[in-house]
Length: 192
Image (cartoon, rainbow, N blue to C red; front, side, top):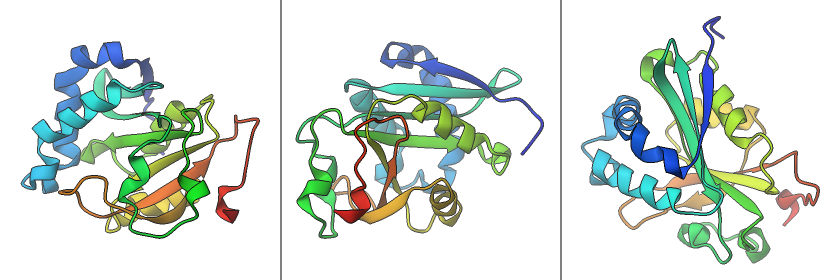
C-alpha cells in the first residue's frame, strides 16, 4: 500500500451532476480498453449511473490523492422484486434472489485510475462505501477475465453465486455476494 493518503468523500445522488466530468474522466481511464464496445461507451455508462442514482439507498464515495479524483465506488439498495437477478444464467434457489427493498446493496461500480492501481485504494473505496450499510448483504458483478478484481473480491470475502448478464447487450459477468457485518438479521446465503 502506498503511503499516499486517499481522501474519501461521501456523496449522494444530489452530488452526481457536479462531479460528472471528473467521474467520466476516471471511467474513460479505467475502461479505456473497452470503450469501443457499445455497452461500455461513456454515454451508455452515464445512462446507467443516472438510473442507479435515482434508486433508494444510492451512495457514492470519491477517492482523491492530492486533490485529484483517482477512483470511486457507488451503488444502491435493490428494490422489492428487483430485476437485478433476472439476467442470471445459473440456476439458484429462488430464495437467494428474493428482494424486499432492504436486503441487498448492489455495488454497481468500483474503479481506480490505471496509474493508481495496486496501492490498496480500491479496498479503501470498497470499505468506505459498504461501511455501516443497513442491508444484510451486498452484490456486485465482475467480468470473469478481470482476474485482479476477482482475486481481490475473494480475499475480501465475496463469493460467487452464478453468472449474470444484466442487459441484452452486456457481457456475461460473475455475480458475487458479500455478507455485510452490520446487519443484525444475518442469514448465510451460501446455504440457500
